[in-house]
Image 1 (spheres, rainbow, N blue to C red):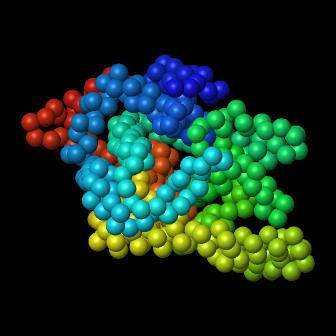
Image 2: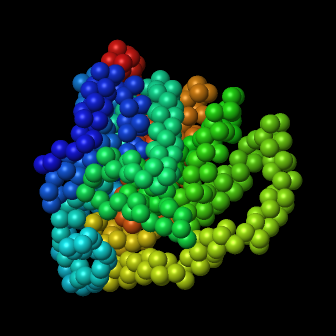
Image 3: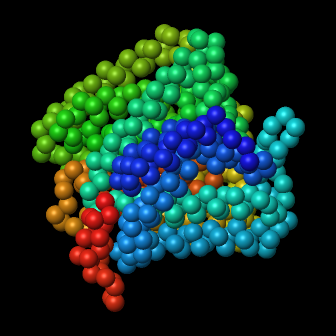
Length: 472
């Protein structure tokens, strides 16, 4: 075990969460999410335990000590519609990691990470059981069960909408600050973010695209940066749309959109354009009679031709912009990177076929898109369960008609964040695990919209609610 420069940060977060309690501890956990390459401890040959994971474990301990998690999460199966597909999904993932690499050993070839003297690369290898199966399964179960349930249990009282929103503010501001520092690094001739890039992951901090240095901030690569940024973008886009004071949410939406554009990720460009268009189409009917929203729609409708014309003029008369646009968008599929990523997805589909639809087991392969990774790893049944769970999160409605407006708006923004993250993950995520950020946000959204029901032969809901209030 090796301590790192960010070990004191992890200890500070643990202490702050235990002192603050489970409610305010949410803010500290969300504030740790932008530090995507900061390790609390490194284990030789086993990988890293990240600062955000340690903070989340501390939050679970805080909730347990407060008596909240035990009083509420024990009723999760009785009250939350999302619990059944999640438990079935995790059971499927565990069985796939334990049995499928052995049952289909040598029956197909998978793209897997191969470590070499000068780094690591993806290469085709015959399917076989490895430590990656157990490692990815543990992270998947921690994020999908322990962390999701912990956030659900804390948020279920409905009194933590402000804490969740403040946590998203902290995560957004820290993410923007780290991005600004990353942008300033080349001009200062110093690697200012190297102290927080100490995990056992490949950090691609020197990638150039036509002379433009790609932006990664506190994450190991542009794709991970784009996934986290668009999750924040989806949250603030929904919050800004109906907020009574839209100045701060609107400013954050513009800044996050600028970061996505500056990331020079083709998937980020397609993701932000597609999600924004789908969002406005989805919200059009709901806000048809809202004067402010209708004025925005009309202004956007009239400005769209002018904006399209301006983009066309810049593309035609600014060679550097046109060259960058060609490389990022028009020539992406035919480039070496695009061809390589497509081969990963095709091989994942081949793994799905070679294993008769069961998959090669979680942790056995890498792809370049979440659906391909799930199909190749957990088969058709695993993908169906995953979609069932995501549908329950995204389409969830409040179980209490008297839910506060503030709680409803925060939960709706969290669901928008999950949808944006899921959309972009479909094009770039290499593995089935949607990540810590997705499950924390999903658990918060489901918790804010859930009312714990009284199961048979159990404590009444009023007693449970009273104990929760006393604990908090």
